[in-house]
Amino acid sequence: MNMFVQSLARSLCLCGVALALSVSNASAETRPNIVILLVDDAGLMDFSAFGGEANMPNVDRLAAAGAMFTGYRTSPSCAPSRAMLLSGVDNHRTGMATIPEFVRSEDRSKPGYSMSLEPGVQTVADRLKTAGYRTYMTGKWHLGREEGDLPNHHGFDRSFALDAPGADNWEQKSYLPFYSFAPWYEDGAPADLPEDFYSSKFLVDKMIDYLEEDADKEAPFLAYVGFQAIHIPIQAPREFIDRYEGVFDEGWHVLRERRWQRAQELGLVPQGAPLAPMPEGLRVWDELSDEDKRLYSKSMAVNAAMLEAMDFHIGRLIAHLEASGELENTLFIVTSDNGPEASAIVDLPSFRLWMAFNGYHYDVERLGEKGSMGFIGPEWANAAAAPSDLFKFYAAEGGIRVPLIISGAGVSPQTPIQSMAMVTDITPTIMDFARVEASENEPVPINGSSLRPVLEGIAEETHAATKPIGMEVSGNGALFLDGYKITRNMPPFGDGVWRLYDLSRDPGETTDLTAVEPERMQTMLEHYQDYADEFGVVELPADFSYLEQVTANSMPKVLARYWWVLLMLGLIIIGSLALVARFAWRKFQNA
Image (cartoon, rainbow, N blue to C red; front, top):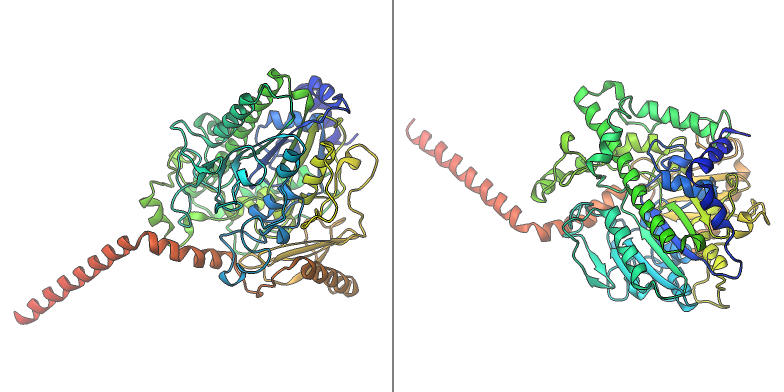
């Protein structure tokens, strides 16, 4: 028995044999409740069940009682991932080919780039609601806010949704100049947050409220919670942060080495598989000042604290289901939308000026608390994504290989499932358990497949290794075939060049085999082009940079919002120049 199985066995004993037994014995005639818990920007090893440092006993409990998928891939960006997860459809057919902040103006009129769920796309909530389920949603939506875009128009009976990539976790305000406010909506109408708001607590509170309102109804329910943890700004209650003081003091080089070793011990990568190198240009921990080391160590402590705080509130939701008698018949799906976020947000042009106008600080003593702007940056993101390469926004494994746990009604405790699973498989898996079938000749058919046969041991794999599987977001592309992968990553951390890797030996994507196996490379490029043609992928120039695009998209909004500030600065500059000129003229006259 390897260390991974031993670890799971210990967790099972410690974290709830009763749950493991009760949830697997749900009646085959009973349609299960479905709970989707979507974490934001968590890498493969950020969950403690997958080897992470954060204390997550409730997610551990679900992992021990069910199945952990270690070969699961999502898209590299949040909105496309959410569209795919909720529909089972490739992002280019959902309307969310990329994220609104990155889309080029010339692409918005093209099919798949509308930045809203397009006509004919059915969400899992649409399908389950038609089949008699109650449907609820709380948290991040990010799939459009125009008329007809919000969750209440896509199958959810009740919803409290944020339509933005993220927002403050303590207050109702934006964390980016791209948005003038935090756009929260309840059942499609603009909504305000309570004074005691903290995102993970509130989203669970609101979900429990919705469940209690309909407690007298016998119909099963779908509950989708899109957590803000651990998206920028990373924020958490002080009592959780204090638990991680000093944990990350050795720096990002040590963390990535430790996670790499742990990944081998847990079977996430083969023994001896090489560790992906750090991208060029990143900082060396030992060369930092003591002040910077303290700031960055604290940042990672807040990140871990935010995960633990989220897990604490997941425990409250589980406890509510147990008290209401619903737990035994509830299927849980726990995953992340993409890999770790690398943006060093305070280094963006003029961002600190915007922070000053919007009540944010970057003070180590108060990091994570109300008013703080926290993030982990590229070095920690690279370490968090270890043993994989790169992080969020990129089609490298660090951006798309994330944890997936399926646990509860109808799922028995089992060893980790290593076969490939895709984000588009979530909706058909839910439909399978809920006994909901897709109709023939649907306008936008499902692309994914149910994971249930693998869960039940009927099949060894969901997707045959000989089946090409492609993906693309903002020029970052990948295709999987026969255990190999071709990957293209765009600037600033990529160069727009396709490379070939043998994932069975090199999951860290360290050795490009293009020159060694040119025929395989050519075949896979042809398969990728077939995918791009079929799904309407817009080819971007090789030098496309999401950072440049988001800056270009944000600038008109910032200028429109802060024209008066620029006008005042202009008047001050003109006035100062006039005073200088007047002083110089008088000095000249008196000379």
